[in-house]
Image 1: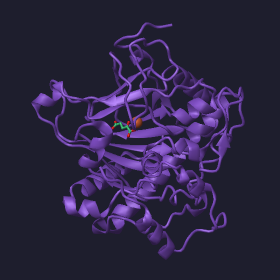
Image 2 (image 1 turned 90 degrees about the horizontal axis):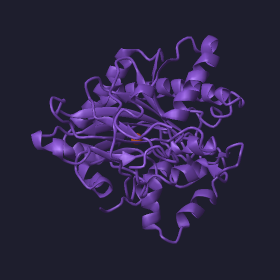
Image 3 (image 1 turned 180 degrees about the horizontal axis):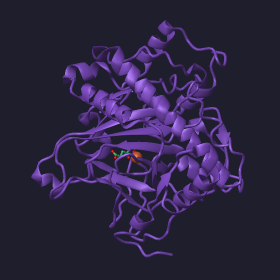
Length: 377
Ligand SMILES: O=C(O)CCC(=O)C(=O)O
Ligand SMILES: [Fe+2]
């Protein structure tokens, strides 16, 4: 066991070459296994997404964030869909400060709390940004998804499990696909900010895995072991991202590396592997010293299983968990629970008159959109 402290994991954060995947998948699986088990965070290179496409996706995000406040407001956040813009004021209720904005575009992750109403209509886009914005975002999401599926296949192989076990419930073309991409934007900060709170508070991701595109030069991401990892006695878990935050004395930087995607294991995969793979706490600290104090952007792709897919580890250490239950731990359902203390939200999710696979019409979907309550902060 390693002692806690600065550098605890730094030397172990691997850069794993995933190129020539079909021929090298056993070797890749071996390396991913070590990274997922020991640290829960790693970099991949040779992923095949051209740098120009990554830059185009960052530029698309920047075009959105450059819109006037009024225009961004039109693309309002729908809590149970994971799509839309969350302003700094909105997020203040989550983080306690105004240092972070969020937007997710593209697929409708969920059709409200209704597993039968998931759809990809593609009808809600920031209209001001035109077709190129939409095409760039969708293409990029699909490219990233393809890489995610390879990682999931290799991770399953590494455990001696069926190669498709983890990849099966993640079909991006499915109407039930709840994986989604977000664009995090952190406003510029002044000199004093170095002493201030993190730009994004410590949390673990409540998905299966996250592929995080970091922008070169945008440092600040840090990790600390947590979640069943007892090597760091300084870490106190006092809740999840939505109501309290873990604290740790020592954090290890995970700075961007050109050509690499940062990957981390989420709570769901930790669950699905009986705790073997680690969902690690991370945060974005405020810039200090000579760090870039301008705006910061990152693009996480959160990989979530279909909502009605139930998974459990082979040792049955934890009870079966559905994709819905996993997502229900996150912010959208938190809002719903808060708005609906009687728990009708879960009932609504599973019981309804719409047949499986029957997507609502455009008008019905728009009606669902407007019927979803917007949380008041
Ligand atoms: O901005 C970053 O680098 C990290 C973002 C993150 O952890 C998240 O969106 O879950
Ligand atoms: Fe995260």
